[in-house]
Amino acid sequence: MRRIAISVAASTMTLSLAGCGVLGATGSGASASPSKGDDITVGLLLPEKANTRYDKFDYPIIQNKVAELTGKKGKVEYANADADATRQASQMQKMIDEKVDIIMIDAVDSHAIAPEVQKAKNAGIPVIAYDRLAEGPIDAYVSFDNELVGEVQGRTLLEALGSSADTSSKVVMVNGSPTDPNAKQFKQGALSELTGKVTIAETYDTTDWKPELAETEMAKAIAAIGKSNIAGVYAANDGMAGGVIKALKAAGVTSLPPVTGQDAELDAVQRIVAGEQYMSVYKAYPDEAEAAAQMAVAKVQGQDIQFDALTQDKVDSPTTKGIPSKLIQPVALTKSNIRSTVVADGIYTVADICTPKYKAACAALGLK
Image (cartoon, rainbow, N blue to C red):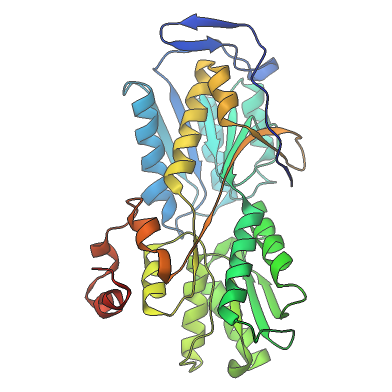
């Protein structure tokens, strides 16, 4: 996918006023639908459960925002594929058969889901790609700037290694799933920072982002490189970072090298507090989820000006060019900014993070 940072001009379609909203056609061709009121159904398809964010944050935030925007008349029909692309295709077909008003999908396999995206298009159901860019005739996309996520991870890893880092410094890369287009972008972003500054000694693409596979891959890297020769580890997300750290500990590593992550999972935040994981990437899930809900409601209700205002970026997928999009900026999460990020945004309380096991470490950071 190629990212183009250009703005979308406000729609020049003829608009009609209805009540307090600005309503008009939602699109052209099979995707067009008459303006609807608040009694809408949003189909939400999320990819897996290994990453706790989907059930804990994304779904409830989207559900609450849809309810807020529709006077509690709109509803969200939710399904989680548990990392099974075939299951997700069946879940999407069910939503098409039930004639939901719009589908929001975070694809397990961005390529494999394309036929179902086309079926939705043929049925006149708009599809928003959420978090991961799916192939097929997608109407809109909301996610984080994924190459920038990788750049933030790579840059922060280099900062952790310090001025002594050079091409003799060996780094292991534990990347995300090859079926997830985001993983490719994270990897590209990280490599843009790391290439030529350190040596990528071992690299893995981890099926379905499974922490247990990351643990096995890290054990292989330790055997190949030697536990004392690993300067740092690029782990693409927090679940895999946990697997990496388990492998390092199992190998008898007592002074852990800096390990990256992503998603600001609670376990990872606690590992950062304890000094086991160096960083994560905090992505403001409320911003992403609320923007997706706003886009879905605006699309269904024909609020073209609002929809265009929410989608001022454009991205290309392998099958579709110029997809209206919203790309949200990520933040490096380290010991220094836990309070100003995940605590300030209400993701976790200090009590959530500073359980008895982490009380002393929290106190040292001023988290009380």
